[in-house]
Length: 52
Figure 1 (tube, rainbow, N blue to C red):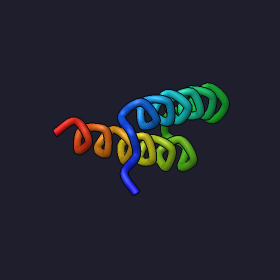
Figure 2 (figure 1 turned 180 degrees about the horizontal axis):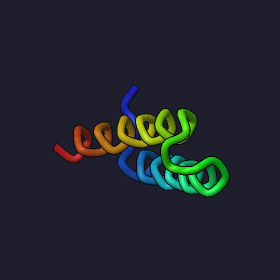
Figure 3 (figure 1 turned 90 degrees about the vertical axis):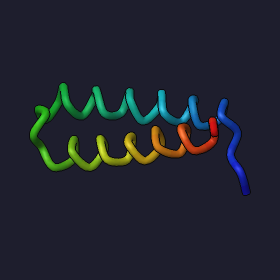
Figure 4 (figure 1 turned 30 degrees about the horizontal axis):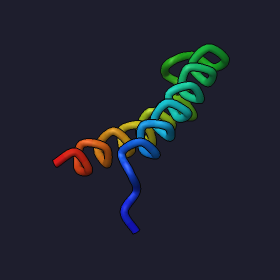
């Protein structure tokens, strides 16, 4: 099933907010923050794929 660009943008924004909260709470080098950053990267990559 293909996800719409709008849904991807909404999910990216949610994942970005989670990332900021984790970074504020644990610092940028915490494993939880790094994992969340990777999750956001996956959504960014999906968004780029959908735009093509």
